[in-house]
Amino acid sequence: MELRDYLHVLRTRWLSIVTVALVTLAATAAATLLTTPEYTSSTRMFFAVQGGETVSDLAQGSTFTEKQMSSYAEVAKSPIVLDPVAEAFGLEQDSRSLASALDVTVAADTTILVISATDEDPVLARDLANAVADELTSTVGGLSPERPDGTETVRATMLSEAQVPQSPSSPNTMRNLALGLVLGLLLGVGVALLRQVLDTKVRDENDIAAVTDASPLAIVPIDTAATDHPVFMHDDSMGMRAEAIRRLRTNLQFVDFGDRPSSIVVTSSVPAEGKTTTAINLAASLADAGARVVLVDADLRRPTVAKYMGFEGRVGLTTVLIGRANVEDVVQPWQGSSLDILPSGQIPPNPSELLGSRAMTRLLEELTSTYDVVILDSPPLLPVTDAAVLSKLAGGTLVVAGADRLQKQQLRASLEALTKVDAHVLGIVLNKAQRKERDRYAYEYYSSQDPTLTGTRSSSRKARGARQVTEPEPAVANRSTWPGERMSATPRR
Image (cartoon, rainbow, N blue to C red; front, side, top):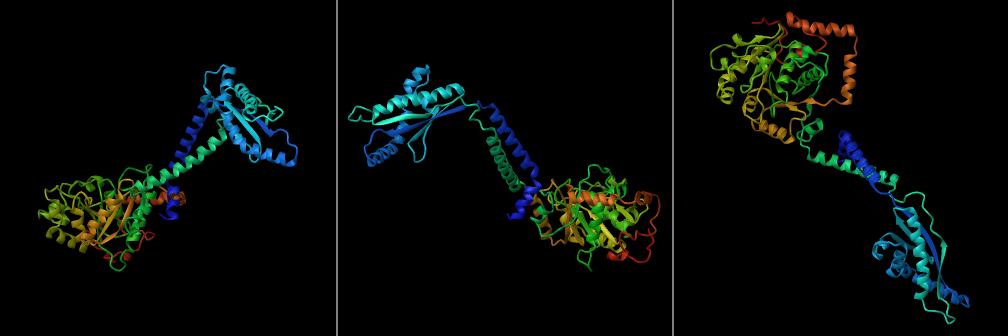
């Protein structure tokens, strides 16, 4: 992963990072609050060799004492000192338990010993520190050889008595919270990176780029507030999804410029990615641009085009393929527009064979010679081979990838299946994508036009269902920009 990949992870998974950090911080705060406060009190002792007639004697005595300081620190925590202290205080603890409550250190380059006692009772902590210092003072004298005059060689003097601490030494709330926050952020980043590595779903264009070099021709956002009607190009013509389909229509006009396909298979990798809705609205968008379009429901497994468009679908594609009807007898115009619908007809027992038959090839040739664009809604690629068979016959294939629905390996397998049959993949449509900040701004700009104009345009689109379309919308597309479009009016059958 490069630096930009890490930044992308932090940007896209910031919520999980913050969540882990807050949970860790809350756990640290709870542990801190539940910890019993402890108090520490300290006393300082000075050790020196008595006597010395000359400076040399004093220097030798000081050196001797410095070398013995570590030994004195060990003596302070030994049973010879702590047993009398425990007996004096009536403590049930033995010398080992009492030693764990003591911290004896030597100040650097000095002969000063610091004795610290820690306990839940601040008064007891003070008394223990002073008692250990007193007992050590009397013990040290007996450990060193006496001088010729009978006095102690080394004398321990208490420099400062231990005092009752006013605040607990542990837990340190601010330090614990700071460490908890830092640890939480590190854990959050680690969890985010781990999720990124383990996450195999296609969520945005970056995930598609990791699978194929083909860039998405359009990103259709998910819009939970929009109408549930599948033909949102007309029912929600000012919505973000409709604008994404218009962008798809425009981008398709520049795919293989000069040799644009007149028949397009719309498929997906797995069910529920929105291929049928994409096919329906793409066909409606091309019809809005003035092209004569036929939408063929070639999903002979689970056909839904007729249901979504409000047609009777028992007579259609399969009826034509088995020779029981002509195509002009079963196509149905949609709301008086330049869009015709060819339903699936009865579900056959052999869909793949029927779609790969010579009758299907002849039908496609007839449709492409009659219409400017033929859109075929086909089954998903991975469960069945129908889409691969159709893709070999059609001029191009459009793969719909459902965000949060599709796995990267599934998309890769679908593209490989199309490559094996030499299908012409036009591009990928990322469907049901999460809205980004730039999409929100674009939508606000698009939907904040003059309300008078917006209402007029919306009304005109709805009125299209009740009248014949006599001319295309010049602001959308030029009819001559799509291959096979006729400049002269062709009478409808």
